[in-house]
Image (cartoon, rainbow, N blue to C red):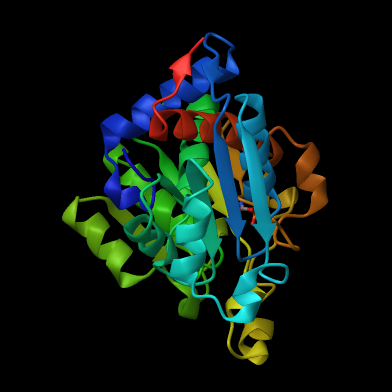
Length: 302
Ligand code: CP
């Protein structure tokens, strides 16, 4: 692995290797040394978890960061191109983490600079480090990634996390239920990938019908910021509200995951049930991001 841009670029072997490494880091079985190295954290789009967990991951490895949140204090405001900005940053940093509103921006970065690049989310396309921490969370809660029944709920068209996760899980023989409003269904190219791999999936509008079959319910936000017309968002914004009552009778091993942030799609009463795992999921992101940085920079254990 030189870069991590899309889950399409890595296979089952890489996934399992990263999960094993993340687990060893979490269990303190190994200590990875990033001292003397700098990570540039370039967030052209807002972020809480991805930005701060990368910052935490780098600092826990003994490395350092410099970062941006938006372009307001950079020379992008003076008209500097993305390519020139990236080239300049790559003269200072050993690794670049980039989140950008444009699909393909992370791939463009990897093609522009010589240092390793991590995609921290590019538009509606991919969020591979989120998928990796999701897989780590699924492995930890289910004891396996194989043969699980996974429900994905919410904005499956514009939500990049579900694109990456569906592709990532496709190596592990899942059964998928995709619950979304009709206009926010999983994109055709993801479904085509799944068909090619003979992965069973069903599209529906109401997750209630199948919730008792699920091992994992992966809930996502309807993303207001990605709608061109506010009225269209208003029509679908309350399509899914997961309540404690809805979870009555689910399987014992059932967990609710969510990449966060949430708005109103999971009520806070769910937080105190044994099924809620989304904050632990965010914590798992630190270990997984440490593992990913370690692999891309080929860091030594101490
Ligand atoms: N899950 C996720 O990407 O969250 P942030 O947008 O806060 O980074």
